[in-house]
Length: 283
Picture 1 (cartoon, rainbow, N blue to C red):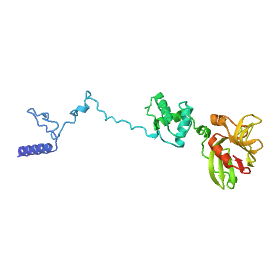
Picture 2 (cartoon, rainbow, N blue to C red):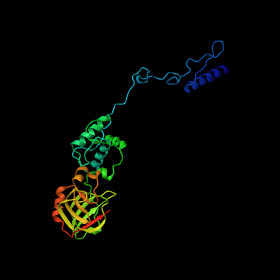
Picture 3 (cartoon, rainbow, N blue to C red):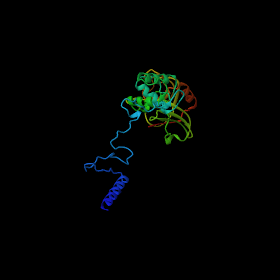
């Protein structure tokens, strides 16, 4: 009876251990425990088994690279045919690095295009002649912000709002800040031209004057220089055409007169202005 109970207990224990995934050590003939037939009964894979190596994981597998993507082309800011103040600044900066010698004109023409190509080629950039963001940033790094007279070395700058004293009657309204002369009648601007003034040693007088004498082919008795279409307003100071201004721009100065470089415009003004018309010279 005891023998049967012992056998039953052993059989139950073995069955329980098998279900729980344990190994069963059965006694050998000498009564010693026999090593288990399998130490991992009930496991799907051995914990010590080496991980499976895929083709991409092998040391000798070829390296895989992300597909190459080309950078998008730089955005074009200005190109041939464009006009405006930004183009004028581009031209002024190209002049600073000696790639452009004319202007600035504010118009992106053939010479500007060639200057941009030269600048680009010198720096290993694509020589398109179009000013893109990369070209512009490189040029900005090599130049300074151009001043008013770098942007308008030969005149043509926009006039400011007229002096309040110019808003009534017939007036030659002359602004030293913007270097412009406006011919105005009853507050309306009829003509605007670029002008040049005297140097610091012979300054153009400021204030309100009146035209007191007109001389079509005048020659200065003091400097012996021609003063065509002269309209005198203060002593020997007059508004007149200047061939030197037409040739040199603001690189020179007058002896106190108001120089006009546009001969056609001053001839038209001379025909319209009368003795007694007001002249306002202001900053």
